[in-house]
Image (cartoon, rainbow, N blue to C red):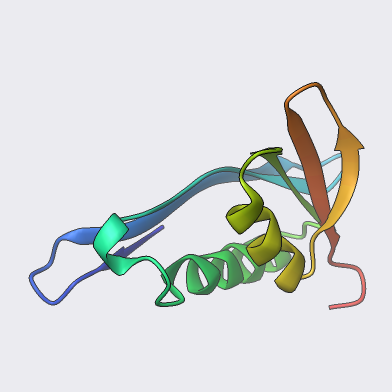
Length: 101
């Protein structure tokens, strides 16, 4: 999924997969927002679209992995309802339960 600026250029995108039919878990693999468009809510808007898509695909949970040093992203994910699920050496796996959405 992507967001485009007024010139038709990509200014934000997310990549994910929502194909774990057995566990009904979707996994966010990348969130990228062009530097000049950061802080404008584009990443959050795309996260919301990821959630809607995953709900429509029958998913019950969203997961992502984020670097522990990326406090800005962790703060955004928490504001969007994600909680810390598992800690690794350099990363944190976060999840969001969709059962009550």
